[in-house]
Image 1 (cartoon, rainbow, N blue to C red):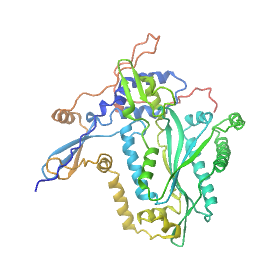
Image 2: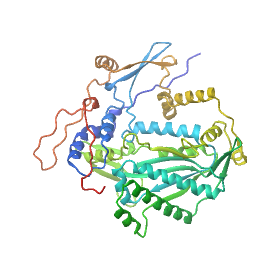
Image 3: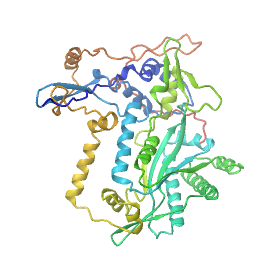
Length: 469
């Protein structure tokens, strides 16, 4: 009997993408311009993220060696940078992992509704300069929706909807645009006497959305004043507007049983900031073109100078240690309902069973440990690629056997030997020296490189000193 044909795994050509070549050519120019600018909205950590992106998928910065236990064949896999919103490849993998975890472990089979909350441009000015504000606003948004759904469902005190929030920092034209996408169960969960019950709610009306916006506006402004993040004069100005500038949409609903539809919705929440298929780089002209999905009668693409585009990408990189995926309500980290809701997901509870009252069996220590091990295995690099590309990267092409990780190689001399044997480039990818600004007689910087191990940047405030506190 002939062995089954195994599809070969091939690492992506990271250095061949237009985004990589653009950042490699113009990162130093952008950083030099940012040091002179007073109003650049990017966080200081964006530089480290962009330099790490230039290492993503490049074998010269280190490889992991996998070896087949049957025939001894080896496979060398380069590392990923795992930087948020700076690397579309890592963002796509992260979206698959996060959505899979939510579907398999957190979101029961009930109807869900998409809520989109957009802030006025005047308020975004302050959010861009203070990383803590969007988290506070998202918390207020979640609490307001919990109160609203609990009241409409008639559920008892302590009940709450399951909430999955994704904070998006980008718009359709790769611009800095912080807003919130949320998937909420179209009803509340309550837990009493060992039974988890779901209380559905009717769809919100236009009047309901207007009332929610009024409540959110009041609560958000009050919190901003308490934090001292927005001047009172700016709050007064925004309160005097005939239109608040806030926008709330809840028109998309996923019915029960449509897990594929819910998966597509979560992947939309977690998608990368840009699509490499829509991106075109013109190195001779120093320009970047990006196709737009909705033209609205305008041009079919946007075009920027490449260094300006790198700045747009840097601006949407989130600050360090700030979560962009958050869980609230019945899925909150300290919620008394979380254990029962996740137990219903593992038990495969249906909507009918949840509406009548689903008995949740307590989960033992051994079962919890087995669940953690299964989650860790599901988030592994190989499992992720199996989900995305339907190819097993740890399956030997020659004999079909399983390949095991045997070493991680970072030594330069050993890497030179391996890369030469594999026929891969052995040169160190270097960023181009920054160009002098127009009209300047200064010389460009020299000795640029992409390796962050050779960089020592210091955190700095990139906003003008005369901005209001």
